[in-house]
Structure formats: structure tokens, C-alpha cells
Image (cartoon, rainbow, N blue to C red; front, side, top):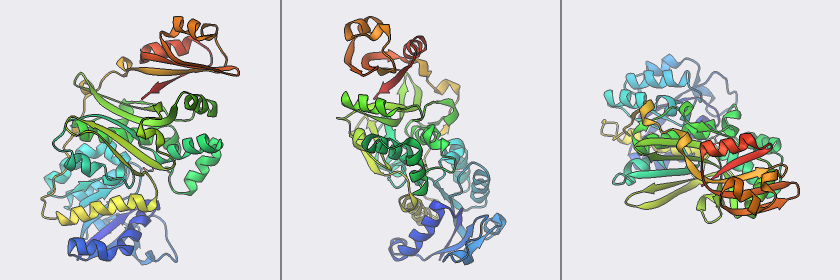
Length: 405
Ligand code: HSE
């Protein structure tokens, strides 16, 4: 029998208990071993909950129990989640997690500790909720150089953008709805301001390029400045506005960023709606592959955590191959100023330099799309650097610039 402890009995933690109970026979058949949830660590009591009797409040009971060999950390936040994970790995217990904050900030260190102690540190659920993405990147794409990653990596913001687009719903109402459904972070600013997606893109970039960048070292822009009229104008030009995490190698350095982008309707990411996530990977041998599925939510995320529990148990002999990445230094990170792409400019009030497309071309260079909507003007330029786009926005009042994918 294998004893498992769950750290954190919130949305995902309770989902893990549910999956391990509901699909116990399927899971045990795969492993040819019985799995027992021995402890659930949480600060709260859960009177009347079927798992009530397993709830404890002292982490040391788990740490010091030699019968517990796998610990599933779903506490959220960096501390004490990182400290508990580290202590468990050092005590020879495998750790699986959905905690992207810990993986993005401490993943390289925790992987080293796991390797040194012959145990597993697995984090399939940290990106893309229930979508298999980490294991396919490490295993199924092992013979490829991954060259580029573009993904819708946050379910909450995709849910909000979809409702704004299809129902004209108000931002605050949709956010409340996403929170009620258990998609949003405890502090939803992490979702709507792009930090959650930033944690996820740096995890994917670390797996693809072998270097782990801090989410604090990349350009991050959320969805709070997107107006419904921007979405409508982009749609008129044949694009959906999506919050995109993007990473690629530029001259041997990693360029990673999160921002709202116009995605052409011909790109499969443009049709990903609601809480669903999608990740497009470019790789030198396979070409382009897409991963799609539920990016947040109790049971989808728990499904990925439980897959890691199964993997950790199946490789309890230390034979598991863990991802390899090192902490990046400043010289590994590309300067975002050098990034160039097509731009979508929108103006609340038509400026002198955009009275018509001919006049606008003098200021913006060649323009592929131009439209006037009441007082507003929208146009799409050829590729333009971050620096030039920012300079134009600073010069022209009421101007917003979006990147195109
Ligand atoms: N708040 C996250 C999201 C949860 O909305 O995608 C899944 O990581």
C-alpha cells in the first residue's frame, strides 16, 4: 500500500481526494498497488466532509511519518508551499504539485533536490490545468528542438474575454462568475494582470530552452485595459483578442512575454473559448503541435495531479527521468525592446495623423487594415519594434497598441 498526503484542501486539493476515491480501482489497477490518502493538511476544519477524519494541522506529522511516500502540494502561494515541498523531498518523499508559483520561482532548485534524493518532483498540473503538456514536452517531443511557444495559459482571463466578446458582459460580473466556478486565483489580480500566465510561460520556456527565468524578469501585461470596442474592432479585421504567453529563442537568448494579442481567425488559438487553454508549440522535427483542454477547475486540474501521483509511485525505485533546467542569468534573457511584430493601434478619438489611411501611412508606415467606428479609429501596421510602438503611443493621446500573433 502507498500512503499519500495532501497539502491544502481547497479547490484542487479536494479534487485530488475526489479523483483518488472515485477512480480508485482504475488507478490501482494501473499501478497494481493500493493507494491510501493518509493525511490532509489544512488550517481549517471540515465538519461533515467525507474526508474530515484525515484532516490535520501539523505539517511535521506528515514529514516525520516514514509511511508517507508521496506528497501532493496544492496549497498555492510560495510560502510555506516551497518550504514544505523542499522538506519532503529532503526527507525522501516524492512531491507532486499544481503550484505554478513555486515551480516558476523554485522549480530548478527543487528538481535538483529531488534528483539528489532519488525521488520525484512533478508538476503536470502547473500549466494548462488538465491538459497533458509537461510530460509530452519532456517525453514525446524529446527528439525535437522546441523553437517557439504561444499559449492561452489562463482560464479565468479567457473565460472573461470570451464572455465580453460573445455576451458583451461586464468585466466585474464575469470575474465573479469565474471565482464562483473555482477558476480564479485567491487574489484574482494574478489572473487579470497576467502574472499567472507569466508563471506558466516561464515554466514552459524552462522546459523548452533549459533555462528558468523569473516571472518578474519578463514583460507582463494583463487584460484590464481591453475595452469591448477594441474586441469588436479587432473582430471586424478578422482577429480575436486573447491573452497570450509567448516565448522563443532570439540570437541564443530567451524572449518571453505575456500580453493581449490579436490572433487571426485562421490560427486555432483564436477559437479557444471559455475556461479552455491552448498551447501551440513549434518544433524543428514535428513542425507545429497544439495542446487543448480545460485550463482550470477542480477535477481537470486534479486529474493532472493524480497522473503525477501515479507516475511517482510507478517510479518509486528512483528511475524517473525528471526535467532538466537551470536558473537563467541576465545574459540568457533577450531584451524585449528588440521584439518586433505587427501592431493594432486603436484611438479613442481620431488624431490628426489618422484622418484617413493615406495620412496614417505617413505616421505608421504601410497599413493593412484601417477602419473608423464613430469617434474611434483602428489600424494595423507592418512589423514595428516595442520601442517605436511605445513612442507612438506616448505621442498620441488616447492611443493603445496591441501586438499581433
Ligand atoms: N487561475 C488559474 C487560471 C487556475 O484561471 O488559469 C489554473 O492555473
